[in-house]
Image 1 (tube, rainbow, N blue to C red):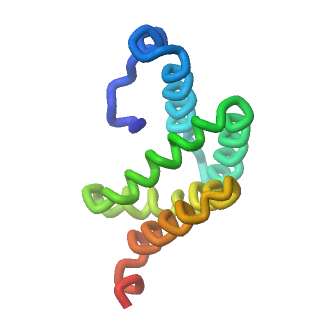
Image 2 (cartoon, rainbow, N blue to C red):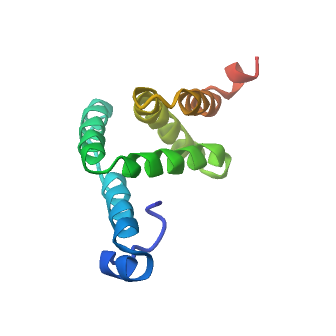
Length: 125
C-alpha cells in the first residue's frame, strides 16, 4: 500500500485477484495519494476522505489501519524526518480513527508506537 511500490492498473488487479480486491487497493491507493499544505488541512481532509471511503467500504479503512500499523512497527528503518512525520500523522489521524471504530487495542498500539518514535528519550523513562 506504499507509494514506494509500482502501481498496478486496477483492471489487471481485478483480472488477477477479483473486483473486490481491486476496489480495496484502489481505495487505499487514493488515500495514500492525498497531499496537504498544512497539518490542520491534513487532519480535516484525511478525516473527510476516510469517512467517505468508510461509507463505500469499511474494509478500505481497515486495510489502511493495518498498513499504518505495519509502518509503525518497522519505523526504525526510515530516516528520522520521515519517522517524525509518520508518527505525528499516526497520533493525529490514525489512532483517533481506530478509536472511533471501536478498535481500542489498535488505538493504544498506534499511540504507543507513535510516542516511542516521536519522544524516544521520554518513552524510555
